[in-house]
Image (cartoon, rainbow, N blue to C red; front, side, top):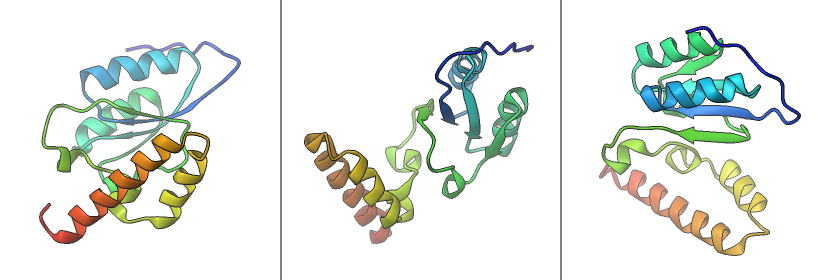
Length: 131
């Protein structure tokens, strides 16, 4: 696949979580639109690397190494158990990042509360050993 980048006024930094058919097409569209795909995550090294190579970007198959601070996280995963899909600061019990996210959501108190509740439930689930 040959991708040609177009320029836009606002370049977003984007992390793709998933590297299947949907992620491949979406990431190509974002790339062509001029956005900066900074990482691809996939459960398998082969699929993460294959898509990342097409986009000339970083990849990982370790959810603890998903980059923090992107403008957008595109989640394009196949259907599987929600515990397997969980990534991010709650899984890592990264209280600093959770606090930053909560601070960023301060202008949306209902969403901020929802994020707080879900994050703490995920932390409790992973600490319980039931995952």
